[in-house]
Image (tube, rainbow, N blue to C red; front, side, top):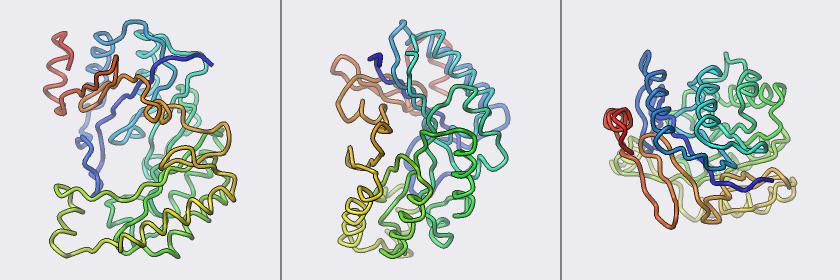
Length: 293
């Protein structure tokens, strides 16, 4: 296995902002993605110095709003301005509803070899609290379709500590997902940020978070249950079958070096952490004029 740095590429487009999300994103407008890919290529020219890249992670936002052709354009740029390891792990975050009418195999042909699905919860009453557009059945359908398309390195994100969530519901979600044979799960306790719609609803008393002891019990139950299903905890939030640990996650976990591209993306190089400007227009102006953003 070749050892290089990690490369994070921010895809800052969403169809709708999730109620809990405080990551930088904008609504996808016609033509905006292709214009952004031109700016991203300009930043690659600025930042690329032939560094060896061992992992690529397309995060967001909603990277699965990009077509397979657009993903191929991004990865062609990586190969042009960096040295992409032959065994590189190339991950893409995806929302289930964006994949319902998508040729998933085309993403594999474009170069994606690891897919991370934002399932979050399998309760149709709770999904609207999070601002999610898919249903529980949509999520399960996409897992089946991704497996059929040849994605053996497949992960799901799940959230616990959601308003209205119960221990029984959480156990059902984990039992249902693990029955599908996924090799990787990421479990996140809901973080409430005051400036988000969810934070405002909770602060105004319209919603109430579960007791923090219940959220802790959910996490403890998962830590007992998942190893019984062959999913070993290798980091605070991540569980995997042996050999399916997310190599990009481990770069962060081990405090190794990574480069972030795109607005609001962060890098850690030579002991210094730096973040790009969190504004699409300013980002585009800087990189198109030859300045690092």
